[in-house]
Structures are given as C-alpha cells and as structure tokens.
Length: 168
Image 1 (cartoon, rainbow, N blue to C red):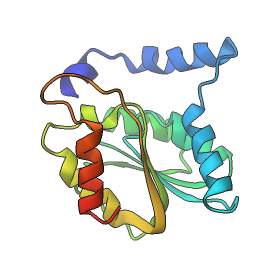
Image 2 (cartoon, one colour):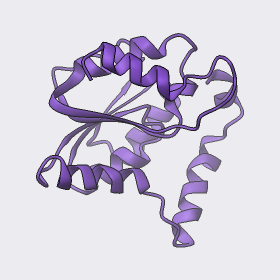
Image 3 (cartoon, one colour):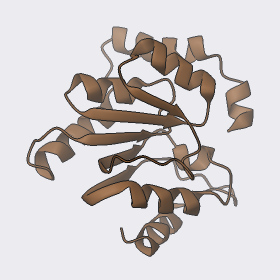
Image 4 (cartoon, one colour):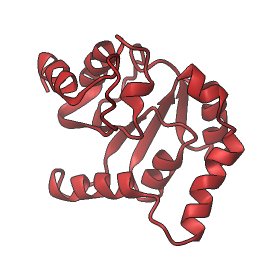
C-alpha cells in the first residue's frame, strides 16, 4: 500500500473518477451492488454500511446519497481528509481495519477496490476476523479484488477460509 500510495496524486485519483462520470461511464457499480443487496437480502430497507478501505469516499458518499447510513474507514489520513471535505456529515475514521472498533453493528461491510491486497501481507486474517465481529446478525461482508498471482497475494480461497473460521 505504502508504495502504491506514494505514487498516487489524490487530485489525479479523484479526477479520474470525475472524468469517467462526465463521459457517462458507470462509476458506481459497487453502490449498485449494495443497492441490489438492500433490495434482495434486506427487503429494501436502508442499511448501516461500513465502507472498509473507503479511500477518498466515492462509495460511501454515493451510498449515503441513496439513503444508507455509512461509516468510512481507511488507514490513509490524507484520503480520509479528502473524503471528509467532500462530505463532512459522514463519520470518517483514519484507522486500521484490523483494530477498528465501533458500537455500530453493520448490515453490510464493503471492501471494494482491491483492499485485501493493499493490506500488509499476513494481516488479512485479522482484518476478516475484526470485520466479522462488526457485522450485525445476518449481515454480509462483501469483498471484491483482483486475483493477483504474486505469492504474497491474498486469494479468494484464503478469504473464504478466514470468513468461515469467523462464523461467516
């Protein structure tokens, strides 16, 4: 993560998404997926959502605009500051997902955007355990990422095993 983050200009990062949206491209696929889960799994009610690895807030802000209650967490304080400037009404935290705590129990926890492979190798199991603890009964942990072939990458089979070991 640290290597990737040093190479990323946050203005350019946000501008990329804004440019895609201006061209009419769909930039809210993750929010669309959560909306479908709200409809199909939760009867259409508004959800409590943890945007885990929220970056500059794109997903959390969109979900809030759709009526959900969102808390965003990211290890990077610069990204959290950017998210907070975009929407100061959302609760944003610059914290580690392995240790983040909240009195809120979440209907859905979303780790979009390759989050597991940006985490420190070997920490993913602790993160999954902590996120499982933060789920409300019947809640869902939603995770999407590319399946990288590097030996230290976190693969779907391990994610599933870590989830099952924590009652998911």
